[in-house]
Length: 138
Image (cartoon, rainbow, N blue to C red; front, side):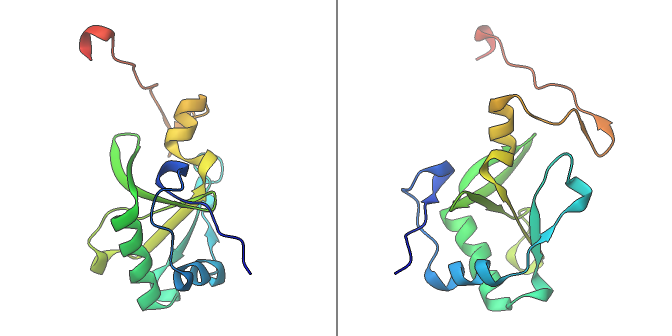
């Protein structure tokens, strides 16, 4: 018997775990490493046209229905964590979604922000550090 995986909201096991067909799907997919972001945002992805259409759509739906809202800089994104990997799309309507991304939890924006390991540049642009609001502003 397969050991249960840890899944859920931001590392918590209270979220809705992926059903077995979706677990098999993510395990069977050939994930492509995003070489363009290797130094800044290491992650991998699958492309809709290259995988099972029905399972791709079901995975996107599961991420959006059972995920948690997080940030990537100023962008709000719905993330879903499964077994130490964090999955997301860029938020287009499901019919227009062509990519599912994933990375290790420690490579997410929020973890790197918390740990002080955000990249200094992104797309060859120097990134300004995020200003922490003063107590008077909160």
